[in-house]
Image 1 (cartoon, rainbow, N blue to C red):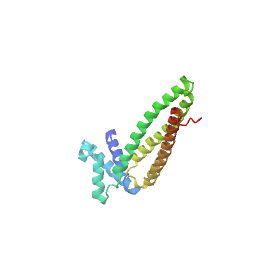
Image 2 (image 1 turned 90 degrees about the horizontal axis):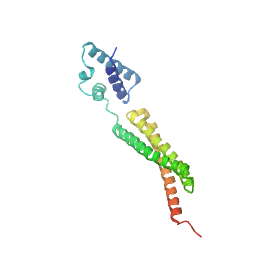
Image 3 (image 1 turned 60 degrees about the vertical axis):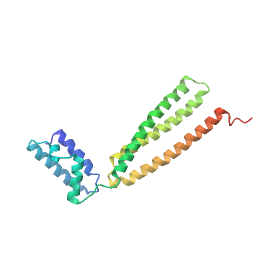
Image 4 (image 1 turned 90 degrees about the vertical axis):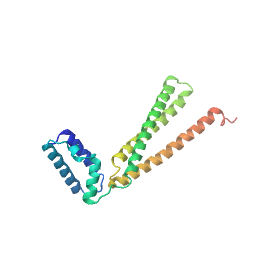
Length: 192
């Protein structure tokens, strides 16, 4: 039976191997081989990670390239970077819109005067924004997790399209709100 550290390394290696376009039988064979290597190292009372002599993902890359001549799927780094970008955008946007959400609640509940309507509108925009940036976080996690899986590329492209369309609609709505709200408060649209 493998110790927890070796089990974690095997899981990490298998997660990385699954990002290559391999058959299920090939993936299972790699898992058996790697588990056998770890068990052999444990029997000899050696550290499995030291036997690899490199990081687990580098070992998997070298193993796959030397055995089957397989190369790392193209675009993996770009997709992983896009996933991280979406996650950061989602985190920052969620934090900022949470602040707007709290301010709008304050304007709606604490000051129920003329600012009450603006507070309700801000509340509505903040809720839409939180949903939007939550989608950024979700799709960013999905993209980073599946960045090398060629069979999931269509899903990732569709997620990107959904985010793009949602971002454009959200930007248009917010821009129109800002234009009409700023114009009304300055008096540009106050024709008598």
